[in-house]
Picture (cartoon, rainbow, N blue to C red):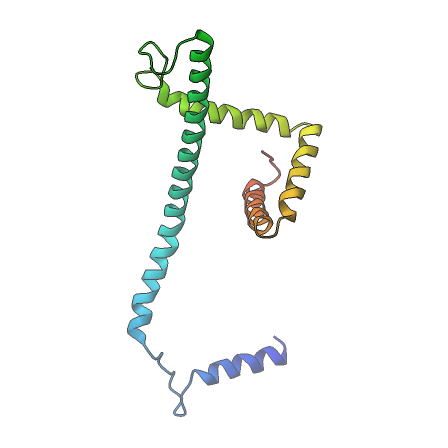
Length: 163
């Protein structure tokens, strides 16, 4: 240890010792006893709740996108068939077997296709252009770059493996 480190350690220890030489008690020892488990509980629960919230948010977003796509497809098919939407024989979402699965499957398939598109050279270039464009927008750029840094950090947690 260097002399400055020893001196700073002594000063820190001297601040916590009263003139008689006994260690000083904290001002509110009961608050410290209550606060420590509370903060430990928060550190445990907040990531779980945040993860659940994000999963629900993504599911709702994909569900809404899938529903919009399916409704558009069914309206287009009804138009091609020449059946007005008000008729009983018009295809609709109600009673369509497997509609819950399709609402989630179509957006996931689109995400997969986007993933394939951005893994090749032209897709990477287009993705870079979009990134640069979004980052130039004042508030949106800050939010986007923060989320992008977080996603990149999570992607690199596994070491040399890449997604």
